[in-house]
Image (cartoon, rainbow, N blue to C red; front, side, top):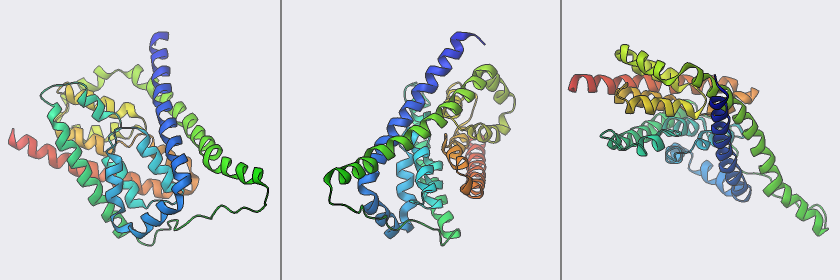
Length: 289
């Protein structure tokens, strides 16, 4: 592997991780001001919270799954809402599909619609099955324990700026390391190798793309999208891979030792969902065409 390739991987990792840092930081700053209202709203509307999760997941940004995982670990959102975000998000896939105009570009619409509906339905079903989840109903109000103005300002500064910044930087460093490692691995293997393998194993493509979707990095969604545009994958395989692909969301869950069991549940639900809907779509496509 040449230095040029390694440099490109590092720059791409820095760019992607930087976007995550900005996205997560801005959201957490906003969250620090509306914490109580948001948690109260989600608690009051917990039955349709997966609907909001599916809508949020559509945003074509790799920070959505990271942020959703972070909110889940902090017990702001339910397991079903997290599942809804994971299944509806597409990382960089939508950007790749929309910026490479072809006869397949129009398939972005059924892709988004399918992932949105599947995300909401599976998310809602998950919350029905896993009842009595512990969700934050409120947060402690900021208490002014002293009359000194400078103390009050320092507490506000920590809550609304320093804490979100430190938290976002921790996520940034974690995301950057993972991005570099996986970027080097994909660069070493090569996209052509994946394309040749998919073409020669057409009927197994939904399974293979689901496995590629496990890659905790936006490179997985980009690779799946590129393979689809190069006619190496049917639509069902594209759907299967992007249902499974939740970027670095899974890794953020694994980073928290207390949520390992829940991470396994999330993983299994996403994988089974991607296989079922991927093969269903592929079978319809194969029989029709």
